[in-house]
Amino acid sequence: MINLLPSGALPPGRELMMTARFADDAVPGWARFRLVVHATRAERQVEVYRLPRPAESYRQAEQRERERAERCEARLARVETGGRSPEGLTDLREAGLVNGLNGVAVKRIIKDVTQRPGEVLRGREAWGYHAGMVKRVVVELKVENTGDTPWTAEGVPGAELVGANGERLRIVRVWQPGPLLPGSTGSLMVESEATPEQTRGAFLLKLGEAGGPRTLTVRGVTFP
Image 1 (cartoon, rainbow, N blue to C red):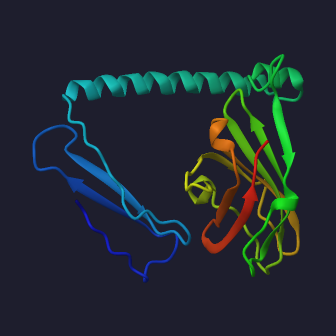
Image 2: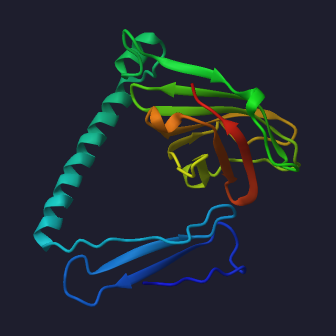
């Protein structure tokens, strides 16, 4: 057990590395933690389970990961050589997003969206997307920056989608075409993994700022 006491002297975004070494001679012999100070997120307790195993099994796992990385690099090279991005329904079908019976459902949710008073980032329009075949949901927001400095979403580490029962959906991507300039309105999307059962009810969306303290909070996010 390791107890950590937060310090108010550390600014948001500060990263600290901590290495914990085990007393026995089993493998792995140590665990390394990356501690990140965040303006809106905190974990009160983190449990780490250690499964000691022979060193040979680690070498085999490393070899499998190396082969997997090589296959991914080859696949990426083929895609880049093709020089074409998905454009039409055929591409959606090939990607497994639609078939003869199922597709991507869309729901406009702007009338249900509420935010905390005083936030300089205002959600003006919102849509929910649900691709049941691949178990993915997307929140699309039109956001207005009423502040006096640009705003950029932190990305996956600073995003949360929390249901009414406290369950968090796994965020896989946060997309924003560029910084949201003062006085302008722009789009951003948050994609998560979710089963049909997990998409029921309303969600709270939180987005942190990259390198800054300002957050975007949207309540009442629902999916079709």
